[in-house]
Length: 94
Image 1: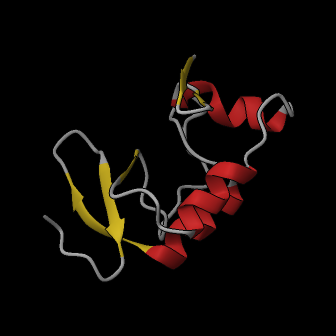
Image 2: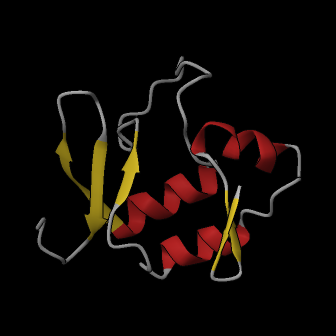
């Protein structure tokens, strides 16, 4: 874990587990996603076509955060190793 600007950043592999265990409060990140505070979001999945059998070792976000990404971001690229790049709706892909 690393503390940056008063927040704790958690490695994505375990983030969702920590939220489910109520060790980490997801609300600040959910609010930041809804407020479009991230210029880019990288995920290992397509939020509009989620795999119900997603490997448990693939990092993901809680459902509320995925929903905010759907509302405020758009998929701009999927690279060769399967990383999905999301940018705020209305901003260019660059």
